[in-house]
Image 1: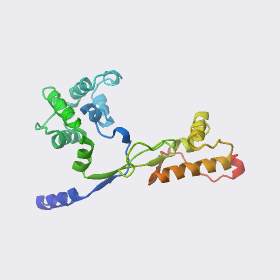
Image 2: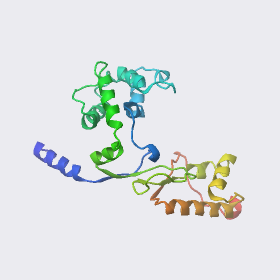
Image 3: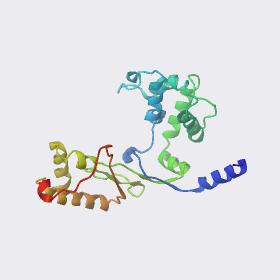
Image 4: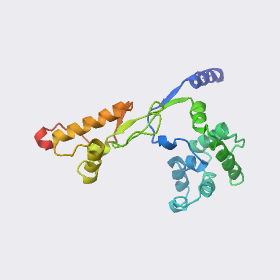
Length: 229
């Protein structure tokens, strides 16, 4: 492929408006607040662990975010050949005006402060979506999520069904189902009504998908109403 064609294709792709079909974003606090929110993602923590950093060094709940980033940088300097670190450097250039080729122990603190100032801007969330070319984001919602307090036309609800499929035998899951629907679990008929009510609730909030994580051995099997009871 010629360089000219590559540039042309990249320019056309950049024009596209995107929909992110699967995330675990908290729509009540969707945007990052510090560089630790980005570097705390498992792409970077697992890289650091693979380079020999003990998990306890960055997973203390009371650890200051800036200190956490400093500790991660110590390990990531040995991982410049990974695509994840390349992504991080490019992200910092695009969003935070970072000008160096590498994030190092000598420059990370200045980058952290510059990023924190940018993330504190009142329209930071809108800036992120606009600069990324993202119009809508699909969420991953528990079945008893009230789906209140956020823009469901931007952050699209997605019903996660794992608890209903795999953990309905647990009393705490049945209690959550009863609280969410007002229907006590008492066999197949009540379960059908409760699940119907969940779908009505999610549909009223603009749900567009359901999600489930299936183990490799899972195989669905039809059962009768009597077997359900």
